[in-house]
Image (tube, rainbow, N blue to C red):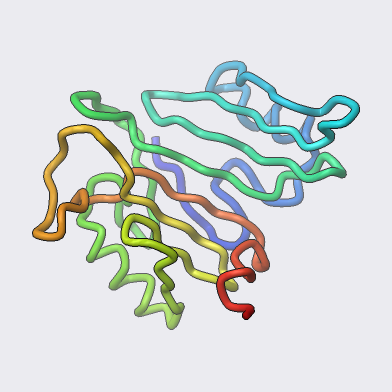
Length: 163
């Protein structure tokens, strides 16, 4: 299966702005996720699950609308037939530098809140290379490929560009 990253619109089949029930129907083929929140005092909900080894979290706002989707790689020694694609490149297997080159070719600006995290404000697309697992690493000690990716609404990373 291929999951196409479509920032800032979502990750097929999840589209930002979907109602909670609609999103749960969309991920039903992946199995039933664990839902956290959505009760008095904790109105925001998250749905966590995995399919074919790829983990995901769907984040919902106070109104119950999907506002971000995060996907993460299966982990050390695990495989998947699912590809997470951005412009035809698998963000979990292709080198991170190649993915970043494609992002910049679109004219998007990449910011680095820290050495393991990168964000594209205004789109909003976020990548991490955080892991304690044994994976191939570059000269700086970072994993060669990304370990998670987040797609959110256009203002999700605004805090990185405001002073």
